Image (cartoon, rainbow, N blue to C red):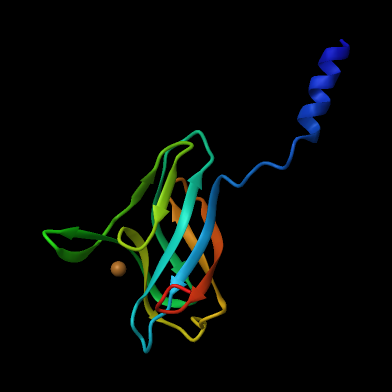
Length: 140
Ligand SMILES: [Cu+2]
């Protein structure tokens, strides 16, 4: 009986549950003029279910698309992606040279040194909000 109450106590005092989908190291690469800004982050699916990232929206962009960069035969190309699967307990990396958010026609919110809010749309209906730091062309 004593052991049981100890277990209950430990459960009650465990740290707050992590968000079902964690977004960290989020940033945009802002380019001069109205050029599209690439958005990068590390995502972690902490649930026991597979999910997919279906899209995103941001007040910092007229439109946000999901792109994937690749290099074949020395040729860099970029294509639109419908969704990005993230397995249960898995991670996904949006990084230069691979998956990225493409912020089309950035708004005046996209200022180097500032932050831009982004909402990711997941296949389970979840909306994940994250603040993306705005960096310059060098990624700094
Ligand atoms: Cu792109």
